[in-house]
Length: 188
Length: 182
Image (tube, rainbow over all chains, first blue to last red; front, side):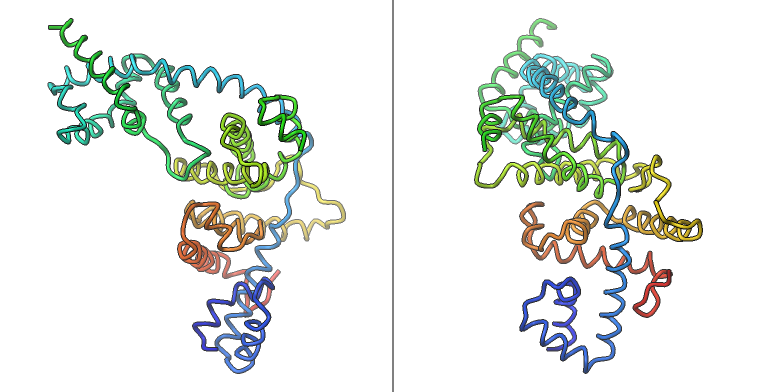
């Protein structure tokens, strides 16, 4: 075993997780290599030090309200989910305002066919502040919550406003476009 | 098993019993990752709520605990990514100052050491911290961590290596030629 292989297995070895034949080779190498012996001692000391933080105590009654809070939240979440389905009109109005403010053609921005969807997604970066400004922070918070609802099983990456719209199916998107057109005509 | 059946069927009581059974373990791993009791509680509760909401996609063979654990760990990472400048990492409960049988001098040394470790772990970026915590305190293997975080085993090793290097530097004064100073 060389020093590189030793270092690769060092952590498992210190934790007693290395396979027997590897442990045996590591021990032989340890005996012969002073640098690796120092490395081993330092790593073992570090893990032992960190292990001092292995235990922590729960405070008295710290989790007493845990279960009731979870059960209450289930009902709240059900209400939030309903919000998601009610989001489309608010989103449509916000897009129209965005378009009027910045003079863009919503039809182009919403079209998946002509690549406008990318431009549209970029424009959505303003959604959070726009919705908060138009509908108040409460609505922005609701949308934020609905956004979180979309995170299936706490996925590693968060889903932003862009994804909220981009994740809509063609049918929903069509409805959104239609609503936009309607609002545009009303305005005209 | 009855609770699992009830949980899948949407029985709140059965679900409540499962939550009660696993709340401490789920809370503990989240607390280790975020280093703040209030946030850890919120995240752990959210993990159970999401589990309930997605119960139709639950596969019994993976186990309820494993499933919620996975959700909780990923929620904690999400939280850390969103709250980089969050309050200091600390596992100490202010209500638990006294340890039985510990002298004043011992307590000073222990407290200082724990604070130093907290600070060092708290300084790690989200993913490095997650990988480190799962390996050091949850005793997970690299492939288990890779599966939990949906990253490659190579990424686990790289993140763990970087975390260890940083901890070694941060806690260098407490290490002396392989021996603990304290």
